[in-house]
Image 1 (cartoon, rainbow, N blue to C red):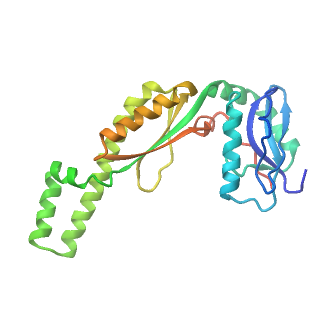
Image 2 (cartoon, rainbow, N blue to C red):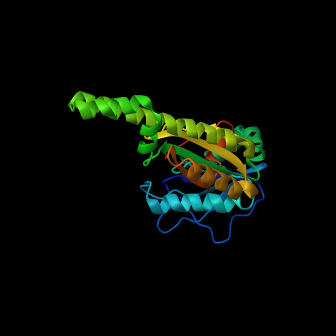
Image 3 (cartoon, rainbow, N blue to C red):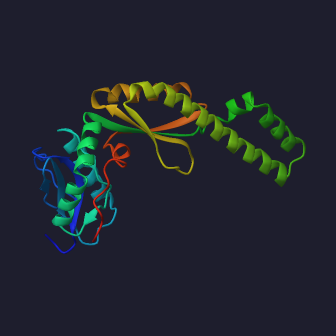
Length: 248
């Protein structure tokens, strides 16, 4: 082990083999190993010096998590989780063993699909046709052009487009929720009217995405959807699986 500490990728069930030829972050890619504590195991490597969120390392981290998930449930750590040493990792596994086991059972067979709803870029014409207040403000600008009138129109359009996107997003959530095992609201993202993740059975993830895509196509004048997944189940382990404390 280097003096940079131990990089922690995930927690898995003990006895689960690591993917063949898998490697970790860093250049050259770090060799993987495991830290076992009873029924749970952490997948780790030496932490590289001067660790930063380079695209290469972000992809290596994500790829390993997805490959681990192919063989069973995974509690993913966020990129950059570093512990001082293996003993710290082992102690954390022991302290939270019951919660880790429960979290592994919770996400077993599942993947995460994230959906963000944004204002439709081509939604202005439909908005003008449907919103009497926007039409009135636009006529005011045409009759009496000026900074204040233009500002009022711009603000009203932005609010209305965001509202329409949020309403469409909520309709989508209601449609998708019966297809998912769980849903979790994500943090606010600038420009997004809605940010939500779903825990979906791996076998259902393609149908889930197609349903969301069809909704987006049918409501493109109201909302633009950004769909990501299948992903590691980050949003569904945070409460049950406290991360290994950073120490490097």
